[in-house]
Amino acid sequence: MIKVVKFGGSSLADAEHFRQVAEIVHSDKDRHYVVASAPGKRYAEDVKVTDMLYRCYEMVRAHEDITEYYEQIKKRYNDIIADLGLDFDISGELEYVKNAMLHASGRDFAASRGEYLNSLILAKFLGFSFVDAENVIYFKENGQFDAEKTQQMMQEELKKYEYAVVPGFYGSMPNGTIKTFSRGGSDITGSIVAGAAGADIYENWTDVSGFMMADPRIVKDPCSIATITYRELRELSYMGASVLHEDAIFPVRTAGIPINIRNTNRPEDVGTTIVATATTYDKKHIITGVAGHKGFSFINIEKDMMNAEVGFTRRILDVMEDYELPVEHLPTGIDTISMVIPTATLEGKREKILAAIERRARPDSVTIEDGIAMIAVVGRGMAKAKGTAARVFGAMAAAGINIRMIDQGSSELNIIIGVDDSDYETAISAIYHEFVK
Ligand code: ASP
Image 1 (cartoon, rainbow, N blue to C red):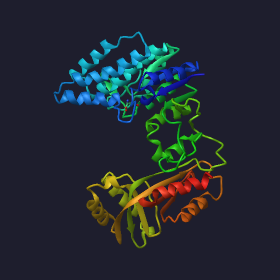
Image 2 (tube, rainbow, N blue to C red):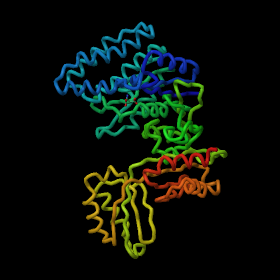
Image 3 (cartoon, protein in one colour):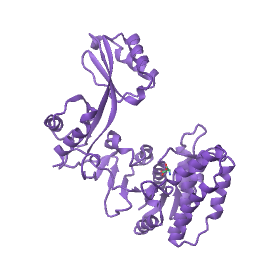
Image 4 (cartoon, rainbow, N blue to C red):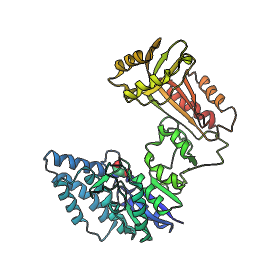
């Protein structure tokens, strides 16, 4: 059995966390490949090493002296080594990184050194080999991830080592320079390593015990989700983003490898497992979770005989495309159609969009309405369990909430509801407590 384990920045922020990580890794000999982030925050006001490196890069560009600031970065790594009692001298590496930054090695190079240095230390501490992501993760000329080349090179390299640490977050361009994924990208590296290693499971260790059924800032101590499918997770993406990078799903999903989100500080918790398909569902709760977001707007359009006018929807969607506006939902009536879009994307474009819709579609009226929150009630069991919608709407009525919009995906995996921003928290709480008694 092969397990690929990724540890996030908060799990590798200091020596104490390194020890916890070592205990987790050594407690299961199936944990062959470890992907590491850069040291994260040790306490709320602390600064992540990645952010410090970005700052150094900016300072160099502004011709400011980084000597003093860079000392803080050095200290983060040297403290970890000293506190672990490791016989390991990283000063040469630290000096090299500083010099490279001073000689215009690039923004991505600077940021990537956070995981590079941390992984060197972790490999040493675990007694594992070190595989530099630079030699196994590749991007194409246009900056896109090169899945084919990476798969081949990574497979060849991993075969050589029974146990290894791979730094997360970066790879190399065809010309050999370093390129990073977007922020939080070590999750993607973990997923790629899992795919190439043909892992049985990808464990993603972080500082929460997986996904909760609802936002804990709204619902006190919500139940955690034991199993969730990739599609359900997408539907719940309003809440998923902070736990797992969205792009981390693809490499393991295609290979059919489940992802297990685990808590480094509470290794006894089983966490949440993300799977391709699940034949069963939680009969007690029916729904898998409820999540949402404030800050949406409706663009409401009315026109008599709209239903008979061929091409009407295309014309208004053309306008949305021209103005690069993402349409999240498109609820319709016979003579009305609304588009739900994030309010922020309308910034500075409102008048132009209204005018363009008037011109292209000649509606009877078109208006924009702000202050809408969108809520997704998601569960693979909803298609099978009758009366789920009635329970959702009953809970809303009992809480005195006016539902502004309803949409059900054809997969019957979700019910989407629009409410006024001011009703958002009450609605989430009412739905959660309807299903979790
Ligand atoms: N260290 C990088 C960041 O802070 C990547 C990661 O932690 O996944 O975004």
